[in-house]
Length: 313
Image (cartoon, rainbow, N blue to C red; front, side, top):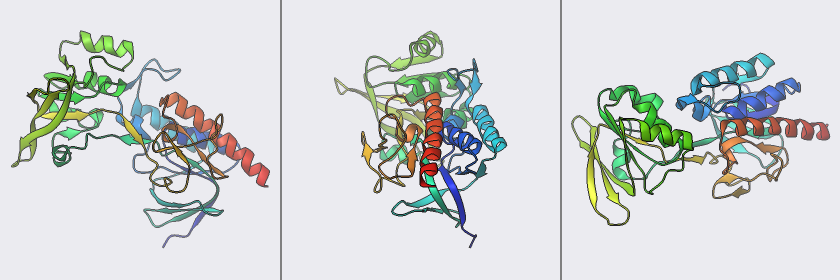
């Protein structure tokens, strides 16, 4: 079994919040250890062009996260490719059990585990995951060159995915349960002007249809939310883009939550309901959910942790 690893500050998660916290904590000479988790870099590694990151007119999400990781390493943060599977916040030092078997102990903790894609919850959706059903256009769009694709959702993510998928698909149909989109106006303008994209309003997806041998998607069944009428949309790729849910499983029974499953923080800070534990990014933010606000909260978390640790000393 690996030797235990102790650090003054343990950062769990590696999106903009986690990496920014690592930069500030390293500059404060806290020698932070950051455990990356299942998806190093977080949601931005699965996005396409990021056009609202200050200083970059346009940057690919994965490239931005590579730069953030390199910056954190350069400042002195220890970045570990591991997954925390269990946290004990009942006593200090806090204890974190990892998938590799390493036990991490920490005087203070920053949680930046982000969020995960939501699914529709259909049995047929589960059946065809990885065989025509996906939640990541940048991961899987390449496999649908010249084919028809359906995207479900109405926010920025759905519109961005639909636009990105036009690079491969012969046609993209965006299905939304309402009669207007929530996405930013500039994205809506691009969507409505694109010759490859059609929008199906006031419909919800109720079933994914496909073949058994080989396993694959052939279409999705959509139902009109008002009339109940159904129709089948032929497609070989179905992309779910209906938002994200905070990844709070590690602490849902230990920390105070709000707005469902988001980790509560004291207003104006990143302090959680347990002293010495701080939270940042999409794990706690149910309002803004932007990369730049996550990074800002990562900065706050590191500064809050530094102040708290100094007071303990």
